[in-house]
Amino acid sequence: MPSPLRTVVSVTTTVMLTFLGLLMVTFIIGRVVPIDPVLAIVGDRAPEHVVERVREELGLNKPLYEQFAIYVWNVLRGDLGVSVLTANPVLEDIKRVFPATLELATVATLFGVLLGVPMGVLAAVYQGRWPDQVIRVVGLLGYSIPVFWLGLMGLLIFYARWPWGELVPGPGRVDVFYDGLVDQVTGVLLIDSAMAGEWEVFWNAAWHLVLPAAILGYFSLAYISRMTRSFMLEQLSQEYVTTARVKGVKEWRVIWVHALGNVWVPLVTVIALSYANLLEGSVLTEIVFAWPGLGYYLTQSLLKADMNAVLGATMVVGAVFIGVNLLSDLLYKLLDPRAR
Image (tube, rainbow, N blue to C red; front, side, top):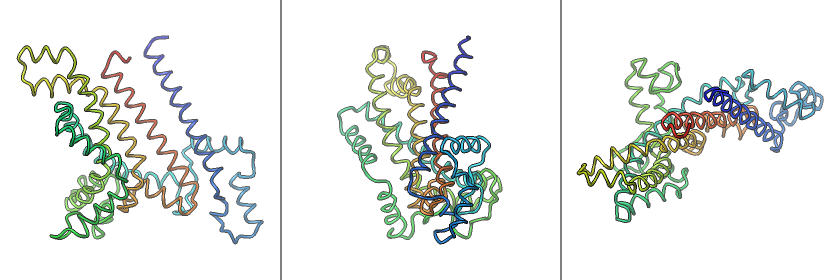
């Protein structure tokens, strides 16, 4: 079998098996949690015959393997059930809230990359000296401080107690009087407001992004800077770096062009994994900042015992993680021929 075709078959098989495993995990979660989806729909005071009728309509009286087969078939058809919380199809709810999470995670990742990569390079160049020590402490704090505490402190300092007035807006994606002024096209408010020419909404939404994206991106920064430092230390010890220096190549060019140029290939995987982690790990940030994204939706659904929404959101998060991992793997092979 030709190599490209073998790669396509291998990747497709891996994705299908991983997705099937993901469906199995979400299905098991839905069956082991101590929440009865029927009672979540009809209430705990409904007559017994109503409970049984709804249980039969949902197919919950069938054997587990049949329920799993029906679940897989419905998912493949794009049917994730109806949300008890919103009375909408779960897929429609996810289409509505996911762009908000995507917007937040994308800006947070940009924050992490734009600051984390230079910090990692500087830490490697000044290995063992005070810039390296400072950057390592900053990274360690990023791993250690709980995100919800950092978010609350951020709101307290920059919103509630800032001595010259509010430095950043409060929770939410936009101020109340701007809410609903822009029609949802992509769902990403920065893009939609720019497309509509609503620049006041655009800048208000951008300003609302600053604090939650900075706090969420801080964890991405810690990870990216540490990995960049590690990759750069390896490159700076290579013979081609010594040769370039002996030939009189300027130091900044050796570091930022030659060494960093060879670091970008493994960094692609690091950044992709960081992005996927932010997409699935933004739950606490969204709760603290009342950010109407997938994490906020998932939490509210869980509190209301809305299992269709919980399972649907969980499955989407897992599918995104699989997709980003696959994309990073393909990019790695594209950028580095040795990995093909």
